[in-house]
Length: 359
Image 1 (cartoon, rainbow, N blue to C red):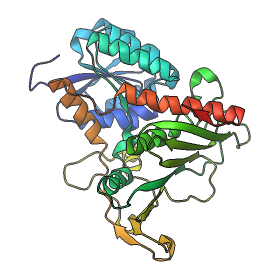
Image 2 (image 1 turned 180 degrees about the vertical axis):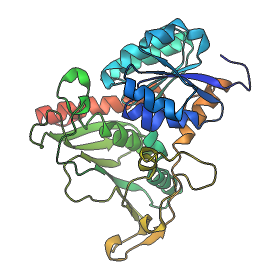
Image 3 (image 1 turned 120 degrees about the vertical axis):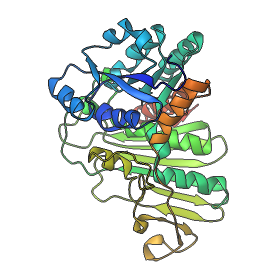
Image 4 (image 1 turned 90 degrees about the vertical axis):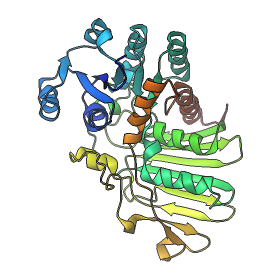
């Protein structure tokens, strides 16, 4: 570990969508972190990375990082899902703290094994669940915590897209070892958000379909969770939604809150915009504010607009830097990720067998 005041040196494994759009820019924007090395053997991706990060080193494989483990302080794994467990295991065995993009693993048992290894070695292990810092989720969490909805009874979360044509790649593969499909992709986000808000799941029911011609992995999936506290979460992830519904509809004993539109941070990162300290990052147009009220639909003027809190993806890596420096808990733990995987595995069994699964 570098000395106090010296940036912590980060090795980033993978420079596809997750690595180039999310991790590299957010690491580089975080005070106290320095993007030291990117692992990719793809010449085009190396050139892309060099344009934005001219001082970065490159490695062809993660093994090159373990050979110089003393020169690194953190490994971030943004490679395809099937590599998460073996690369995280190797990093921890090399004595390096680890951040893994979601899902951390294909099974809850694998996630808990990684957590045990990290604990045995006294190393940080965290999972990049960036949607905890979406603007709409931060706003909803605030509303729930201050009791604006009363007792929440039903949580509806829709992460929908209209992508009638396949894009190709491992995310759409039906091969089990790839851990592809929307259940493990967007499902990792919506399940994590539900558990953060409303606690452990005790029962799971799911419906999962492969709708697009030529598709091999699920592209339209519904998950119903009964939480230990009585809240019911209805979660929908889809690439086949011809007309998008609200991102959130949350119904409580006192009021409901409905929010349309997606957090702007991913779109901004894709467009090359970078986090700034001028107060504009993660801010959406006022016209997109969710509405809080009772009775009349927000589409016909019901409820009052609620200011949306700014999205804050940079908070994740700021918290990682603090955890590494001070020995505090990471912003997302592997055990939390394992609990979400319990639900995802139950959802897969439920959809396959047509039954509800008790946890």
